[in-house]
Image 1: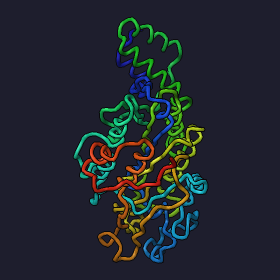
Image 2: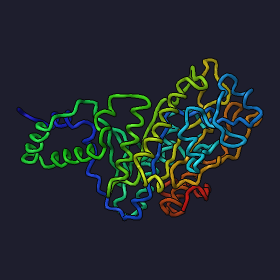
Image 3: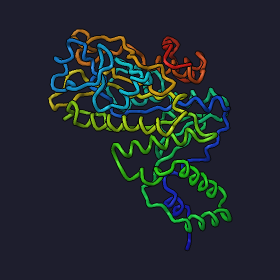
Length: 389
């Protein structure tokens, strides 16, 4: 039987993109994990963290007003499809941040996601990500992993970064893998090393290595989060992970509690539960940042959905998060208070939140935060008190 590079790629699957996970960082650094969930499409923050105490909320939201929210405080309540997040809030391990946005104020997904991932002040100002830049400030070798076939922009740069995604093919049998390894040990050491790296990564991933690639929705999302937790707890493994979840672009038939937003939120909620369980004791040293490119319009559109907006909600979760409260400089939902008469007005800069996390959790310097991590952001001060130290 003849084997080629193409054959090896076919049997190895997407996991061949993963080099050996050995970054060699210090024991102290290995304990400080950071996971970033990117919610692609623009999450409706007014649906997920409903301002039920705002007198204008029922009027503005109309048929999209949440009917049975989970209470947070006198002003805010959580969507009922997020019971795990609600339990974390009660345990002091969830910090919702409302009326939050990057500095971008237009409504293009592509431009907004670019700003969200690069940390720059404007779209396409650079071709690397803020998370990679933060990793580059840590002791040499500290790296991250993306649960994706390709590294997202947020993780591109000079610091070590790996990718892993589940195979969509059936698992090859042991005899085939042994013969492939023998062949490439003899003829192509580079591919032999890549195959060993893929096998090692799949061994760490566990059950998600093959099964996770065949599903969608809640189970598939939870499987990826579980794999991320496995990587993060591996000795000499990565200190950061990036997970992307879609389904948040709710232009039509959004529905308050049974539509596409509710399904996307259920997947996120299950992912957080799976990540927490996989991390085990490491959850106590972990911060999870949940972010999206922009929010949605305050009022529903004619199709029962919401259009691209400005401010949204973000979350910090994890045992290292100083949660159990909502962080919000609430602007209100009166017509005069809305941004351009249609969107929740941003009052908190997302960069200030992320700076606060990176400063307290990884001890990234103020200078690095204002230059290499979030360029041209000297005027954006880090928010203190977000992380338990």
